[in-house]
Amino acid sequence: MENHEKHFEDLHEIRSLMERSARFISLSGLSGVCAGCFALIGSWIASQRFDISGLRSAGNYHNARENLLFLGLVASGVLFCSLAAGIFFTTRNAKNKGQKIFDRTTWFLLVNLAIPLVAGGIFCVILLYRSPELITSAMLLFYGMALLNASKFTLPDIRYLGICEIILGLIGGVFTGYGLLLWAVGFGVLHIVYGTIMYFKYER
Image 1 (cartoon, rainbow, N blue to C red):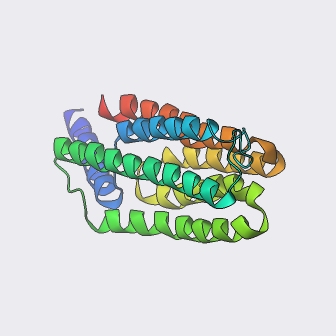
Image 2: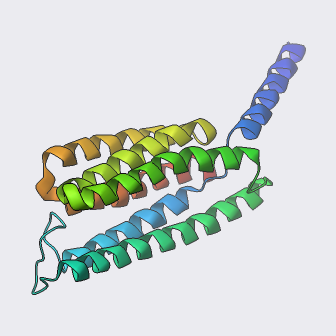
């Protein structure tokens, strides 16, 4: 009986080692919470100037170039703060687990995440001149696909976040008048919910 238990423990340890070598498991749930909070703050700032669609000015701003510059600055600020928080919390989590922050698995994760994101960014630029009302939908769709693509190299739970983002993106393609609201839900609320679940599931 003791031998069977020892074999079971050995197999569990081998499986754990294989998982750590094949997946980037140091991703911190707190980074998702912070990203969601920053997205909600950015959405609130944008809502002071635009209506719920994120397209029409809600105030006395009528210059399209100024509006695009404003949205670009808000989005850049959200992205910068989210990346900074992600690097900080993920690095801290990796040190606590005694794992490397950057190795071959991390490289595969970043590549698989970047390909759909870069393609989505280019497509959004095209939509800017063709159908700007679909930009939010495209952002959510490509981000969801990026998460699904990267889930093979990190925590498997991230695929569920990706699926939710894709669903929101499809909804945004139908209800184009709710772009800013869907952006806030997808990049804000869902990140906070996901990050909280991941924190209590893997880090507590």
